[in-house]
Length: 136
Length: 140
Image 1 (cartoon, rainbow over the protein chains, first blue to last red):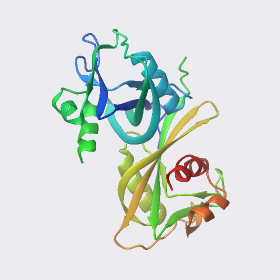
Image 2 (tube, rainbow over the protein chains, first blue to last red; image 1 turned 120 degrees about the horizontal axis):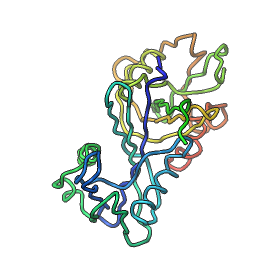
Image 3 (tube, chains in turn cyan, brown; image 1 turned 90 degrees about the vertical axis):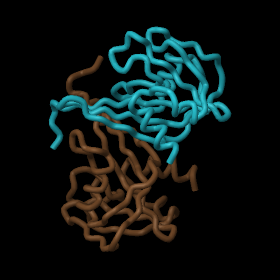
Image 4 (tube, each protein chain N blue to C red; image 1 turned 90 degrees about the horizontal axis):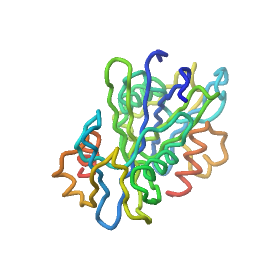
C-alpha cells in the first residue's frame, strides 16, 4: 500500500536537438548533487504543474532558449533513502530560437554536441542511462 | 508552497496491439472510481517500485497476460482534489506466451479488442481519453 510518509519527486528534462547536435550543460561546482557533471536542461515539476509546462519553464530559467517539446521518450527512476522515489522524464525538444544564456548558480558551461561526443563526457546518472538507451 | 498533504503518484498502463486492434478492459460496475468505463490493463506503483515491473505485475494480476514492454508512448497528467498529482505512463507492450485472458471480476467486467474507430466511441477513463486525443490521433 501507499505509505503517506513516502514521497515521490518528478522532474522533466529536455533533449534539445539542433541539427545533429544536442544541448548539454555542465553543473556548477558548488552544487550539492552531482557537481561538475554534464546534464541536460530541466528540473523539478511543481505540484499541479503539467510536465511540459515545467519543462518549458526550466529550459527558460536555465538557458533562456525557446524550444518545441516533442515526445516523452524515457523515464529514469531511483530510490534514495527509505522514503524518496525520484522520477526523471525525458522529452525530445526541437531548438527554436535564442542564444544560450546560463544561470551561473546552476551551470558553468554549455556545449552543443553529437551523441558520440556526449558518450565520452562525464555525465549525471540519468543522462548516462539515456545515452545507453539512445544507442540501443 | 508545498503542502504536506500534496503527493505525487505514478501509474502505468499497457497499450497492446494485435492485428490492428487494441486490448481494452471495462472497469467493474461496482468500482467506486469510474465504474463501467473502458481502461487498459495497468495500475499504480507501490512505493519504490520500478515502473516496468509494476506494469508487468498489474497486467498479470488483472488479465493473466505475460507481457514484454516496448516503447514509452505517453504521459498523462492529472491533479485530483488538490491533493494527488498523478502521472500515468503508457507503454507499448506485447503479449508473450499463451494469450489466455482471465479477468479479476472484482476489477473488470469484460475485455475487447477494438479498432481506433471503436475506441473513439466508447466511454474512457481520463488517461485513455487524453492518450486517444493527444497521442493516437496524431500518430496514426
